[in-house]
Length: 327
Image (cartoon, rainbow, N blue to C red; front, side, top):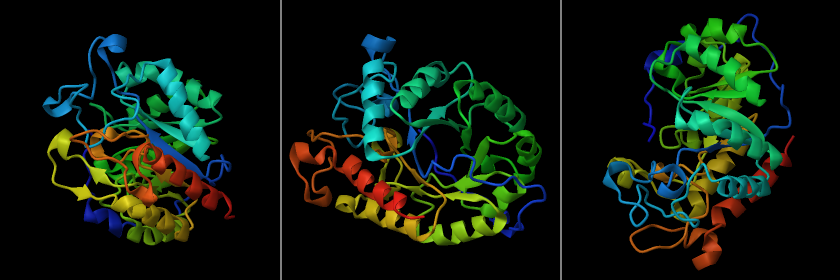
């Protein structure tokens, strides 16, 4: 479960002019869209125990730590057939890049990263790394992480919670990360990312950073010479996983459409999607089935029953096509 972050107001006061020696953008011009993916789920059959599905006292497979229930059931991210099917689903939407959650060396996500990245590439997708705030993370360790993950053919790195350190603390690291690698900071405070000499910004948090803020963020990013990659999502509901009060209703698909429309209006360099399968926070677009005690996608764009299970995947394909039609 990832916390929603609040950033220091000081970040907004930082200068937005491009940093001296800033690297030009566009090393992977074919990447116009990306989606966040989690390989942290486990089952007794595949992994010896349920992993992540059992958060907050849930008792899978009957009761899982999500407001929604996966169409494929409580699955294991170590199941090669599951991962292959997921990557095929993502590829069918037209999304270019899969940003794989990674929690440091020695983690379960680390053990799975290579196989997930390889499966993504086999499906025609570009794998990228989502470097999470693991214990002891700092700019020096992230620099080593980038060198380590580069061996998997990854050239885009998304640093979640980059604002846990002052922007300037990242500058030396980013100066040493040479093209064609790109490093994105998760923040809507562009000045902080500019001070850290990141290549771009992404927002991830679809509650704090709503579509109404995308134009401002992307204008500031452009002025600072940074790539703007705002994050769109269908909604947010983490009450079953963490007992949080925040809620962003899906509105039968209107929330997703509204965020996509805002992203296209912002002239974003690329659009990121939160998420393919973060079931704990209810941001997933992976197929969900109707089940007593769980929300479903029924009603999204007027679809019902089994037809509604893939509604968000199909709508993603619609929006990605719109994105690709723009210069």
